[in-house]
Amino acid sequence: CRVAGLPQLMMPFDLEKLLTARAVDALGLGKMLSFNGVTADQVTDAVNALAGDAALAAKLRTLAPEFKSRMAVSMADEVIACIARLIG
Image (tube, rainbow, N blue to C red):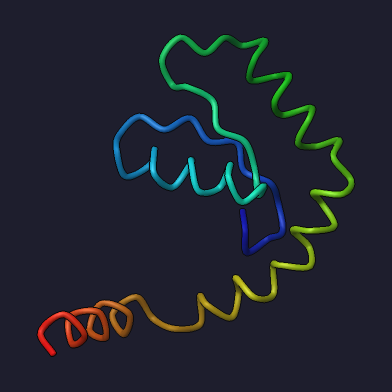
């Protein structure tokens, strides 16, 4: 979604996704809803709010090229660089 310049609606169900969803929400790149107990009306309202937010859409269109450029680096290169930093 970020690469395409679209807002994200996240409903995390494990710790990794929860941390990502919190970051997305805190950065104003989308919205997080609780996975447990979420209603169809809450999802509908959140989707409509995200889709209707012109300022958010403009922000995400501006950021999309940066996210795309980060995707140009392969995941393997990222992992190798991280391991190299950890083992010094």
